[in-house]
Image (cartoon, rainbow, N blue to C red; front, side):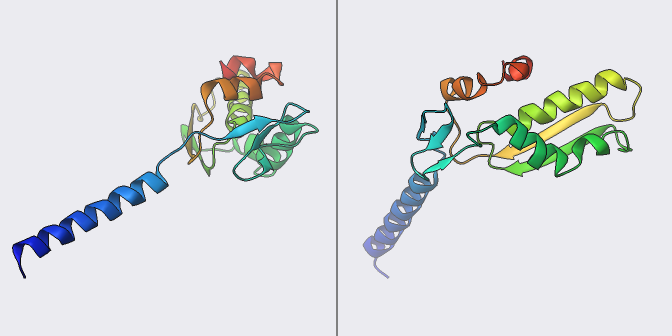
Amino acid sequence: MRPQAHIVKIVLRLVIRVTYVKQNAIQPANLEFNAEGTPVSRDFDDVYFSNDNGLEETRYVFLDGNQLKERFPEHVRPFFVVAESGFGTGLNFLTLWQAFDVFHRDNPEATLQRLHFISFEKFPLKAEDLRLAHQRWPELATWAE
């Protein structure tokens, strides 16, 4: 193989890799807020949570659906780990943190002492968009700040 052909191959591989990285890089969410104040993804034409009451939806689907509050007192390790794909507005995280704080306040001597939350998000919201999304629920302000 000629040396120039080898260089061309290397350059082509680099171009392909750079293109792949650019196409798959983390991008800020492209969203708008609808008339109800709910964030809506422009790219996916989908709401981040229910227009009616996203907080109650999150409590029902995420906390209750996974029986998280019921599992805290039974947990035998000092830490509790939750992992999810798609952080979105962080509503799952905030409601879980709030529930964990209540548990810890009411059960200071429990074995469970720490919450570890792991989440992946390809299209994270900008700080201002998070603030706007969270302002609907002043009861979460302590955890959202």
